[in-house]
Image 1 (cartoon, rainbow, N blue to C red):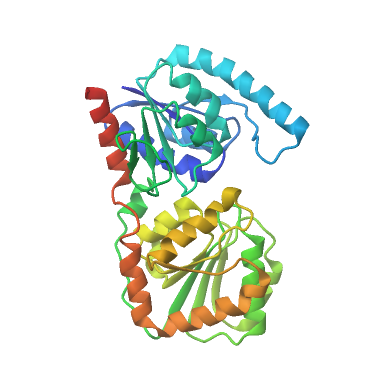
Image 2: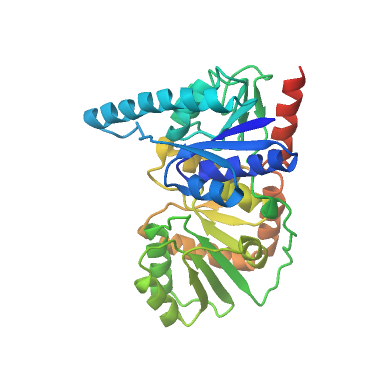
Length: 354
């Protein structure tokens, strides 16, 4: 079969689409991808040898009047280009993971073949809210994101990378060490860096603590100085290539609560302290974090400098409360359904046989 993947913009849209694309490729299907030009997905398709068609797109939300006019112009141009692309490749199925770059080609694609969409967050983005009306099946990571007939909406969790989904779980507690993994997202988080800097500056850090801190390509001079003055073992990386090892080796994770990040954390069976991005659209990061917290898998701390002391106290509590950490580990294992990629592949295949 010829599978068309439509995903673009951020890694939160691209990586789940990539996991599904690889599953179809492993089953000897051909993969074509539509996404933003000069982008993450453009580079990935080059590496994976997927046929790639670029389009131009601009986000609509949060723009002023003229910004919205420009966004609409790009949308209609993308619609026209998508018609020519779809007419050329004639896909058997279309799989889309949302993001503004996906809107035009996914709508056009729904007239060429069955459209399957996946929503990663607890609150659906604008693009997927629209595409849900065109989809044959809508996959959701969180139950209840879409209120539609059960046969159209299937809760599967998030498609995560194969190496993460098959991670060897290691949660044996060593009282002599407490390794903290700090994740700022692919672009890093200045706010999280500032909070950690204040914790390190204002408190005597226990000798058992060590840090692996992912910062993105942000200026880390103040953060590095704070780590050095605290005399704590630390490593700062703009990007962590060996995420499996990072997950396996840590005792707790401090992170934003983007959908793909928390899905990986739960798959790795790790306790976490989540600092939701305050300005995420529809406050979806807080809703994501709340979903884990209500199930006992994570703690939530407000993402602000004023919360630094609360975060330090919580870390001290969790270091010594082994039963609480063990409970969080067991809860994390139950948050999302297993085998999202395989369930998506199976559902799509079975729907084509009807």
